Image 1 (cartoon, rainbow, N blue to C red):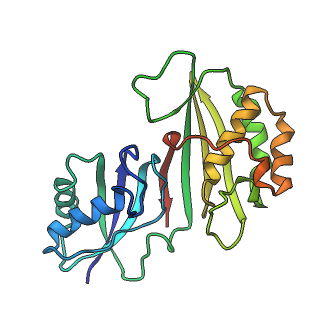
Image 2 (image 1 turned 60 degrees about the vertical axis):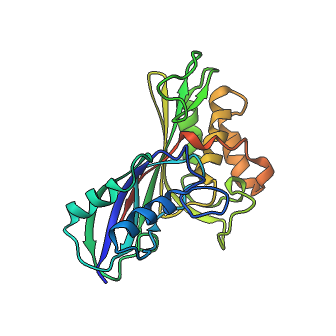
Length: 246
């Protein structure tokens, strides 16, 4: 059966997350329904590179599917998209891959973006697509503190209690904080992340930016290896899965 890799964009707001669940409609479910419509009614599992939570968005989620017949990749993209309407999901590109390609296990790096709108006025255009923080944030202090998390560490402090990973050890390759006007962006890159790791780091960095924590408090929280020392978990609607490298 021919295998295809898909690059997918979606607004996570209407969905219970990437993965199929009994309590609501997921991104994976809608994609599999669209694929079944062009696959002779046969279900094809859409295997994603990352299981984003409810409300989390994607600019470049990756997935793979096995189909009953071969397709020209541009027609495959358009055919799936035709059956996704009116949901806020779009297949940006499709490409043929070998049977050894696995969207999740072949990935060598994942890139996430967390967006904070740091202003007093309420959000209009970015409502549901950024974390609205009214109090002034020091992005430079946030960036300085973030560097203490880069490298290989035990990230128990920044790991959800229900995380199913076998180990809290992860190698964080990049954690940058930058400001562009009222917009603060937190950029994180690693081979893999723990459940809620990026949102936990973003929430704790907000404590640094607001002055609630000192710069060195973030490193102390990491060293504590204690979930209770996490500052807060930032809301899901500010998080984006930007890209996956292979």
